[in-house]
Image 1 (cartoon, rainbow, N blue to C red):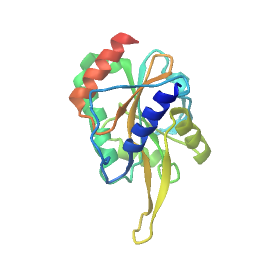
Image 2 (image 1 turned 90 degrees about the horizontal axis):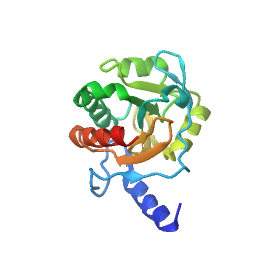
Image 3 (image 1 turned 30 degrees about the vertical axis):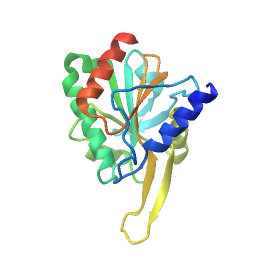
Image 4 (image 1 turned 180 degrees about the horizontal axis):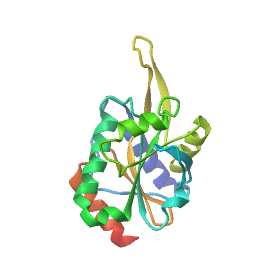
Length: 199
C-alpha cells in the first residue's frame, strides 16, 4: 500500500474506532468508499448462530457485507445492524446476491445461542462467533481493532471499543471497500447496487 494511502486509511481508522455508545468524533462522507488493498484477506473460519462451521469460502459467488460488533453493545451496533436489515429489504431481489455477515468481537459472551436470540428479528443475517483465537484471526483478515474496556461499576464488567465499518467483499471473498458505520440504508443500498454491477 503506498505510504499516502496508508496514512489516509490509518486516519480514517482512528475516526471509525467507536466505543459502543459513542459516535465517531468527526463526520465522514457517508457515500464515499474506501478502497482496500490485498493486505485485507477477509479470511475467517467461525461458527454461526446455529452452531454450524462457516468459512469465507462458503460465500463464493455472492458479495459479502461484513460488520464486526457484539450483542451487548448498547446502541452503535444495533443501529448498524438495523441498517443492514433495512438495506436487505431495500435491495429487493438483489438481496440474494449479498451475504450479510455479522462477526462478533466478543466471542466469550456471544455464544451461538446468544447470537440466535439477538438476530431472531432477521434470519437473513449470518451471525458468527468462535474461539477467541478464531475471532482474532477473523479480525486480522479485515484489519479490525477491538479492545476490552473495563466497566468496574457495571454488571457487564466490560465493553469493547472496536472499528466501525461495513466491509464489502467481492464474489471471491476479497475485501474491496470499507464504508464507515453510521451510514443510512438508502446510501448503503446505492453503494451495494453499484458494487453488484462492478463485481
